[in-house]
Length: 183
Image (tube, rainbow, N blue to C red):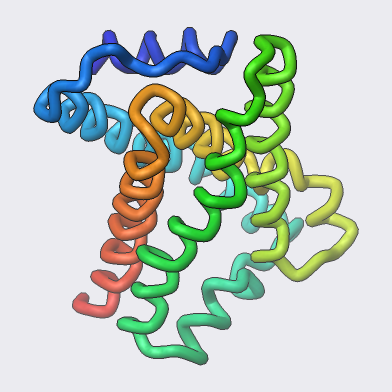
């Protein structure tokens, strides 16, 4: 896993339009699993920042769009949206076009731009206030970083793999969110 993490960090520093030449399914599945663990670990590592922001009274996380969805829709509907619809549509919008940028500098700019825009789109999860706008880089940091991770696997393995990683990431978070109702 350390090797995959270092490869991922190296790629994020200098993204290039280059597929992984190893097409062995077991190899790809193992690397996929490592990237999923890295993605979830990144989210866990960043999450205390949100608790601090909320404790300081800067943002009310009860006003997050997910809270409204939980009150409005059934869990199966939310799960379907988060694990099927969102990953497919977001990957088609934010990762599919990456391979259109053939020139190295253009690709790098597009890679970063799509990751940042992917993050910023998630500001819509918050009630827009002055504090949300000021704290925007922090509030969407997890999605921006994930945009880089999803971009990495999209380029190295293909669009289906980024959709699957996005779906597994969201699915894990949904299952964790739903599991709190059991206790």
